[in-house]
Length: 238
Image 1 (cartoon, rainbow, N blue to C red):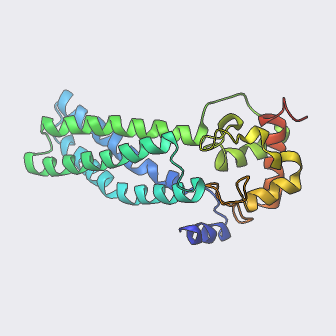
Image 2: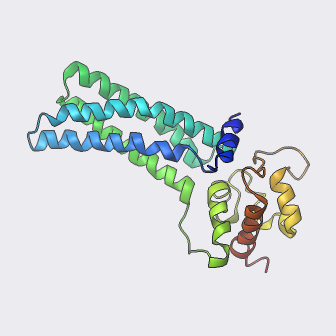
Image 3: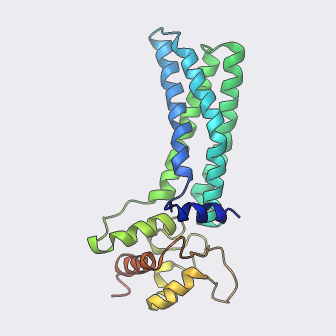
């Protein structure tokens, strides 16, 4: 649905997810509001309370494009797959939006120094921490040992495109079809053909998105194949 956006960015040399470039803005602003509000209360600096309210207002504005880009990345990179981390983000992102709206409304109605507003700032802070945790799960997964130097390039491709659905060589969406034992890994030609046009064993279309040359070049596909062979399924395939 949004492929044209990613194809345009790829032509400009940008091939990464878009959501992470924006997510730092609302998170940073929420943290700023939380800190300024507490300093205003604990150190009796009332002039900082409006600063906190300004931060949370900007966070409320910025959260809309951030959520939209998150949905776009989810559809583009995960084909709308309902991974656990994504389910949590789909719950807590709207919760953050509601809390920010409440903070803005109460802040301007009851005053920036209101303790009720401070309580909402605290809830917003906890919510962005939770969102950051699950975002980190999607990007980094479970931290393992560093890959060999020879396949580090492939490790980056795997982390950016495959790790969310295939942590440790498994398959979150189809546990009976783990990556580590996929017959398409028999040789590079079969592997590249599959990622360009993925099909289920019965020939039907699955949930895995097609990785065109604009997403993963031929060289990156080879690097990815080498990484999977040497690291993900090394005990199986030498």
